Image (cartoon, rainbow, N blue to C red):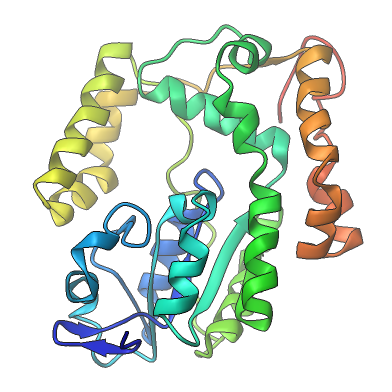
Length: 296
């Protein structure tokens, strides 16, 4: 396979593999603002997972506007979880760089549950969600999956430590820019902002409507319109209003359930970020250690 150009255009120099709810939307948008970086026309191209059968020419069309960029790429959050993707990326894009994100598992679980509620689900507390929906605990196993990428790509694999955001966003971005080989002095206007924050809709029906609309627009390839809707403050107000993010209670049992999954992957996290950062990333945040307290 050709790896840097096809009849449809050039192929990316880097790929972001997620996971979702770990600042991947923030990363996509701040990279897209850099004058030497060009991002795919949409986030979540999902070529190496769901669209591989469409061929490289289809994939390359997502970067047809990136002819003059020094670095260009895409972010598809599902890549990290699909065991076939890592080999496809390695074999198709020779020399490509891979970016992943890691987050505190307790904040990650809470964000996943809130995201589920955004789409219309209803959970009374975190323990109920963990017991009734196996996906939430399964999702925490992403650390070991990222370790596989680290083994395959070596120095061409980079981990964004989301626990440093938003306070240390400048240092984080300079590291990412250096990894991609572009100017590290650029500071995007939205660098210190929280993008795609958790929220719960005014009513479950609104959440389901928003999720369904997004699916239809993706099928119709109305990517620009979908992006505009996501960024619209008016649409966000219509769906979410001014509602505060609900408090989700951490019980001792819920904490223990998460810790059990995390401890099995501690060695993988150490390999990804080192012992010191692993201890910070995996520690329960303030307010998660005792019954009846909410996540931070």
